[in-house]
Length: 112
Image 1 (cartoon, rainbow, N blue to C red):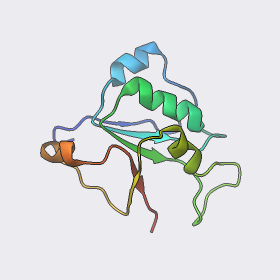
Image 2 (cartoon, rainbow, N blue to C red):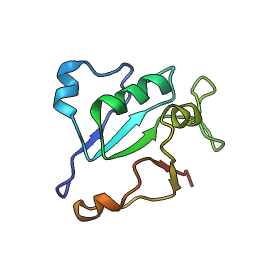
Image 3 (cartoon, helix red, strand yellow):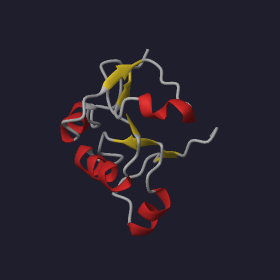
Image 4 (cartoon, helix red, strand yellow):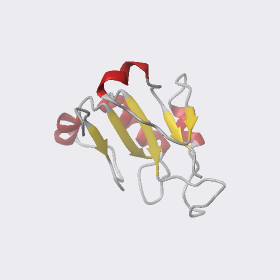
């Protein structure tokens, strides 16, 4: 999209195998499920981030204080697994190819 490579992992429930890793290597943006139960858990998601080496990571598919299934984890275990990265919590993220170097490495989009 507009010169950016964006990988949305949907409801992926396992660490990508070597063929998928090769196809997805080094995306600009990685949207990764982190809540477990229906998708990858925090540890699997953190390993996926390590393997794919994205420039910006956006966790998804987790429970918040605004809702979510009881079986699904919050985002906190994933954030702990990625330390020392510090998340930037924001309601909106706008990216362009030109400003990628200025973006935070880890973004948690806050639900409205």
